Image 1 (cartoon, helix red, strand yellow):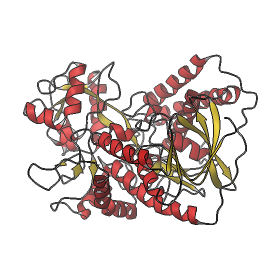
Image 2: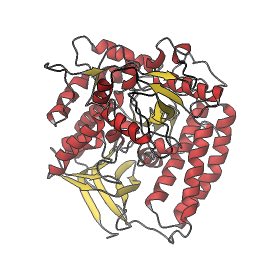
Image 3: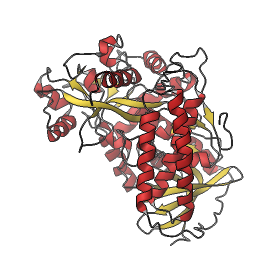
Length: 528
């Protein structure tokens, strides 16, 4: 029913590690409505191979994890956040294990088997072989489905947040099956919508990663920060049919080498840590090799290791590569960099609070300052778990306050008609993703960013006309959101007059002595 209203204490939008963990914690103190635009398991968490970084070994220390995180973040990490999140890591690992995540342990030992990944000085990445995210997601979904205080709404895509007097009352949500917009009201609204990799043409992200939370929060008046820092994962399987398949950094941690098509190893020429350099450096090195040689891909080689070890350690990757026609126990596999993780997002404090009352953001959609200008490997699931825990405490305070759930007006479609040219949406979507890949990718320039801005202005005008002219569909909602996020990325990239971390502008290749965050909010723009 179009006039249907769903009221709860907590409204959670998104079902990755952050959304699921938050829901389980919030359900102890109130009613939760959990909405997700596809199935519960459609999230970036499901695809996470490498694992979750935390200090659980006596050979490791909080001091070293903090140091490694800040070093990778290229001077832009918020030290207080890094210290708080790293120190909370072991407690969150214990919690996940209690939910049923069976992290790999050493044979005949009580110690965890830990991977080494780029940027880490110690082995500290807990994993379940090469399908850690899938196991975390499955364990949490099992508990969420059993919880009587959590009501699940699959195939529901949020359209807009409803704000009254700088307070989020809830959200308008499209039921994709019934094709009607419903109202969801709550005392606390939590955005756990994940990343925005689909803004680019090549990405490791699932199809749902269209920056919905960032776009909605910006339209609601929340502050957005550091979107120019988009991390490109160095190694995605290069294959015309098997798309978006990530080859975990843990393979390089176990000794895999990057080779050009002549079979020459090239990473030692770019960084003393070679294949284990931070991701931005490895991605730029591969990008440079591709541009220098004109090749479509480089090769990742682990075939010199024992075949049994490869199959046991990386079973999903081995199986997928076999389907693609490559036996990684015998030959190198083709890889390319692709958009992977956005280090910025909706600006929040350590508790996930935005600057709009009643609105929280957690997981990849949030910008805490934990990652700085470049996320170190496997810190994302850690941040997601820690921030979900913190936000549950802060949101409980909001729910316990005297604030009442306010009313939302009925969704008004105006004079919108059924879209008669769906090809328009597909064409605009493709054009945005291509221009972002070509002009706002791994290596940027002032001219490229200027061209991207000008072209986006024209495309956004067309998209806004379509949004108001046509009855909304999931595709139209996502198109509007990726356009919004693309515009913000370009604006912030133009604001930063230096190269730092994942943002590299060949016109300003040096890093500035002053480390500052970029900030944007609706109605405020420091550049034209």
